Amino acid sequence: MSTQRKLIPNPPPWPNGAKCAVAMTFDLDADSILHLAHHENATNLVATMSMLQYGPRVAMPRILALFDEFKIKQTFFIPSWCIERYPDAAAAVLADGHEIGHHGYLHHHPNELTLDQERYWFERAQTVLEKFTGTPPAGFRAPSYRFSRNTLDILLEAGLRYDASLFGDEIPYRLSNRTNALIELPSHYAMDDWAHYMVGRDFDYMMPIKAPSHAMDVFRAEFDAAWRHGALWISVWHPFLSGRLARFEAIGELLDYMVAKGDVWFATMSEITEHIEGLIESGTWTPRTDHLPQYPGPIPELDEGP
Image (cartoon, rainbow, N blue to C red; front, side, top):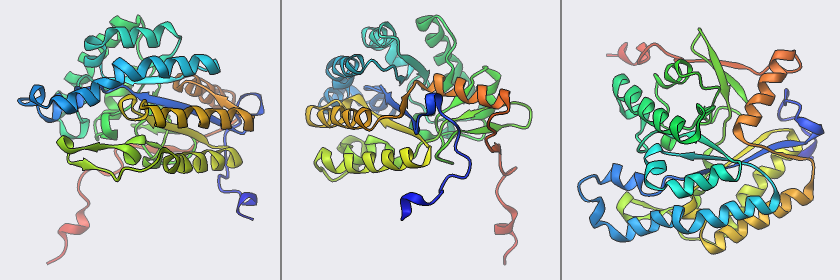
């Protein structure tokens, strides 16, 4: 049977003998993405604006209430512009003991920026975030996963301990620039609600509308596999998408299922990072290391033909 195959040869030991680690992360982007995509005309796109503002204004209280019901702490990645624009929503995250991770300033895509531009927006976001939370962020998720060839250097220069932008495994691994390293906490597109729910004409993104149960079939199947094989299960939710009534009811049911299954470690991203760092330091477990950049530039083979 497939459940008896050892698909992960070196899973990390999780606290208290847990079968897997779970982080239900939320990206609170609100209308930052609209201003970035349609700078001159964003205020005229009123329906889309209302859809995105539903996240901080309506969805966030019910998200925080659900986590409080289950007594678990999780990680919210919030662009610093959104912290400035929706301080009450961000303050409620902190008041409930959750982590806020670095998610850029206005959801700029790092791999579409020059090095100087990327560093500027990263540092501007970092300043806002540190002032708001009182501490430097432990980790980063690149907006839209648009990690650049320069991003790792910038994260390491700033002293961040983890990244959550890449898709290279089902367990944590190290990212190194050959001078220093941090922990990569990977996920993948199937674990992101955007691919299941996003319908937005102003973003030219029109996924087929489907029942939440269809999306939950994917999330639950991925969780069951993570539980069987000792993996790290990181989901990515957007409050304006998954905070809607039927979809959020489904999230609550998914949490019920996970808790009932048992042997699950619910943790923030920084807690997972601390656990992995401890395993490495003690010699209990060793992850693989990926070195970036993997190539110095465009591969030469394509320039060798006629």
